[in-house]
Image (cartoon, rainbow, N blue to C red; front, top):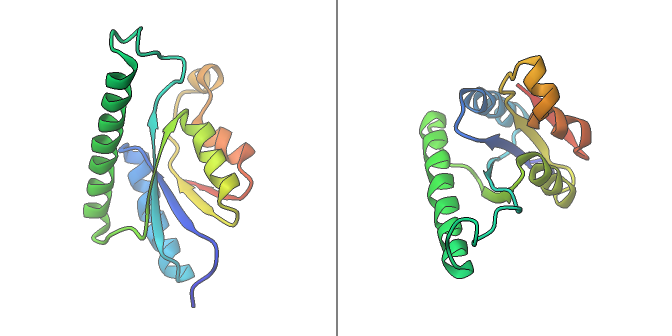
Length: 145
């Protein structure tokens, strides 16, 4: 019996995201759902090609290549730990919290599982925690491990 909502684990290659992967695997089994993976290639739109010393076309191609290779590494490592393939790979680019929230807005019924990096209280206050932002603003179920 498969449920209509997606079960998606957010990955970034960190140990907390691998802990979330293990929890997500258990949830997928218990809920009889396929497990998909999401990765956000961190990129701030304020960074320009000129600042990077490249022309716009070269910059975009290089950014796309980095996004593709880095996301593939993240997914390959996670699937090796999982011992299975994900139903879907979602690759986004931008601010991780904003992109994950937008993904959930565009995919109603998604249950997201993500790790918490455990920033200190000061860093969390100054930088903001991706998991805290997502849990506070995402329009759906978020499990933070």
